[in-house]
Image 1 (spheres, protein in one colour):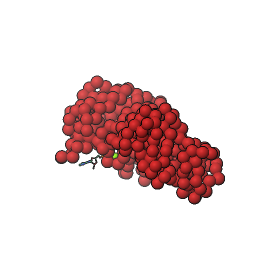
Image 2 (cartoon, protein in one colour):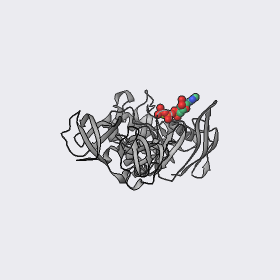
Image 3 (tube, rainbow, N blue to C red):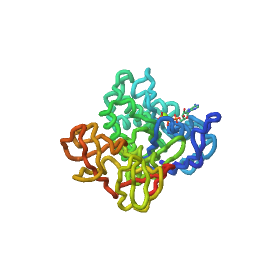
Image 4 (cartoon, rainbow, N blue to C red):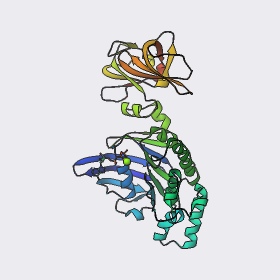
Length: 349
Ligand SMILES: Nc1ncnc2c1ncn2[C@@H]1O[C@H](COP(=O)(O)OP(=O)(O)OP(=O)(O)O)[C@@H](O)[C@H]1O
Ligand SMILES: [Mg+2]
């Protein structure tokens, strides 16, 4: 096991600056999730740590050793890819032991490691099958088994669950988490699924356009996003943003609707975004009028979509409500849960 330090790392593809001054410190045994929209540089960063991509400038350190110039096989890292990359002509057991064979680990030791990994992953009865004879979730487990047998200092996962259906994804998510609890191996996990990030991570690194937007524990990012981008990315359904201006303790939307500022009365400025999560809007007898366009009962809650003035808003109410499209309801923002962002997207409150 080992800590990972990423120091002022940059990546250029020709003139394209794909990663910009990335600094991340990952403690020994941490489970860190890199999250962000497609193309923001998640895989590139992971591949640089793995040694599959060279580092244009900056340093990557594992367990106190700079690894920039080490070959991938010298880095003591195991990577699990999105497509699993299993060898189709090999059995499950052969797939799992392949790297050990290359490293000239003696057969009895290889077999012991494969047996142990198979037991951890529930693959004991599948060891003689070939990948084509496995389900998606089973293939995914074999790919993890291949990583586990090497007992590396660091696990790297690049969207390992994105090929699985929704139910299996939830199950595998829990399995990977449990595996981490058992093995305690430092893990860097890439996804663009913010639910995966929230549920799995000790710490989340939110990336945007090749930069780190914010690093923090999942609930800290949820409670106190420093940027509008992070606020909109973390949380589901996504945070509502109403544009407008604030002056003398009042927030007025761009279509002239007044919203309460509560303890944020000191915030002032033009071109602001008034951020409120769907679960932080309450239904009231009076309050801000909202025109309802769609009602979606999910069972656990009632999601109500509509407009405040001309701007789209989603509410998530815990109750089962008999609200119909076309109705006008009144909503009250929880004033302690407001997120106000300036024109440049930075948090003001
Ligand atoms: N070999 C390459 N040559 C040129 N540009 C590249 C190369 N590989 C990646 N890029 C660019 O670098 C940026 C980051 O790509 P990367 O694959 O890291 O994104 P990502 O965050 O993993 O996205 P996704 O969620 O879609 O997997 C993208 O704009 C991509 O087009
Ligand atoms: Mg990627």
